[in-house]
Image (cartoon, rainbow, N blue to C red; front, top):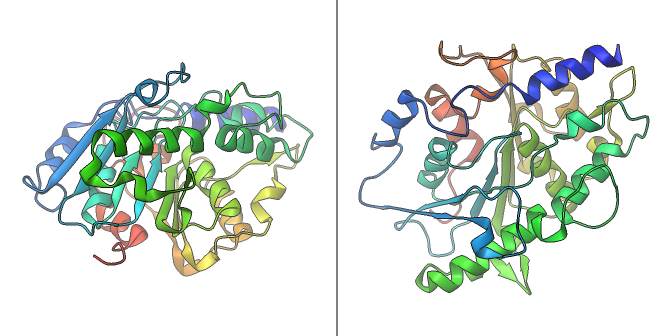
Length: 313
């Protein structure tokens, strides 16, 4: 049974469509010129290689993507979006554009995403495998040897380095306002992501008081033959549960585990959405429904509801 579910987990990891997160589909590109998604005169976009923000970053060096509308409030909340395994921020421009139009400053954050948690921990008998894995990938430290993640390449150091870089290069944009004593000002930050990236967002929200959490099809970390959900999922959350929003597709491979995980997390039923759209023909792979929930234009109204309008906008 464990082997079967490890194969399904691998199917999730390999489920990125041929264009998801790496390049945009023709439909996505068309939406980027739609006034409802991208105002032609108001949008600011920066792309930044992580190694330009910190020379100690050697791996996973595809560009971060930064978007915002100048009409947004000067200290609008920052929304971080992390793609799934093997995804890249440049392919998330559609959802980043929607987030920016909700009044946020949006960052598609490049991070170390291979191997994925589901490639390592399902076969481990250690209930804390996925928590230790995610902790090291997000915060750094030596909590596990199962993943090689240098401190400077952890999620939060990457974010801090990016904000410092942006503040130095674009001082009139005030990126330094999202840092307090060299750490992110979490109460003015939304954490979100798809698949592995959503699991990272959920773990951060457990440990830090963030403004909002938006999860696309994750987390569903489990261990053992019985597919027992990892203890960290049910652990107390510093971020109140009324700030959590999540979705999953009714036909993705882990559609049986995700509602259980969201229930264990404590997300209110009213904040959980079930998507039912069909992926376009060009989307290939053993689990096409999984990756498309954060990339298909038909879901734009759902994304708007999940992120909500940014406060003060």
